[in-house]
Length: 258
Image (cartoon, rainbow, N blue to C red; front, side):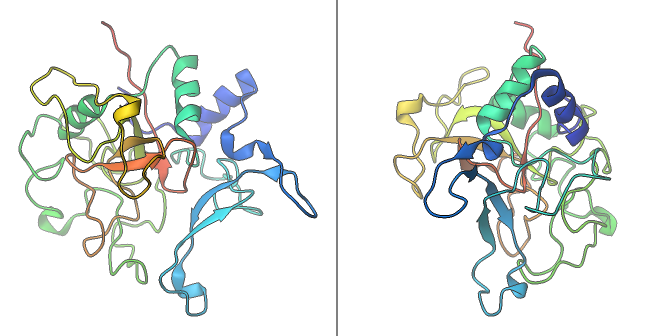
């Protein structure tokens, strides 16, 4: 398994070599002036900056993509070693296959994240911040209106900033959510199997979006807070629409030898 999340620099090498265009960059047809435009991606926007819209923090931004993480006018200059974001499931698969690799199953991902600490609530042990030390890039403070940056970062962090787990892997928790290859259902199936691969596509189900195909993402992100989602644990999981990227979603790959 990749020791870190795939970075902007690594993804750029793939794009330069293949000419690949991510789904967020692909032009879609619309109506009115400027009807043909990049489809875009979902961006977190500080709700305190939105004049009373304190319940809204996700925006579909038409020109947001891996090259422009916050939308038009932003870029990845100086963030070459940050995890690539705004990649859909198909984008991640395309990169992995270019390298002769795959996306991990949910079981592979969770086993790797635990680093040998089976049964511990966190990838590093029993305490969220042992001796007051931040062990991952998450949200400190009251989400979504106050981030104290106690871990040193407001959004994504360069990969490898935090201590490796028992298997030598970094950033399995926090920083960005990561794609797995499993289709999502609210409950696990096949827990007695070795490396179960989850349900079939036709059996996938996200209660929030019935009928929308979703894969499992793991690990939480820089937006996970103690008062909000707490999905910065190896056991936590979340559904993600396969054709939609986000500013807190990336991936890593795995090489299966058999």
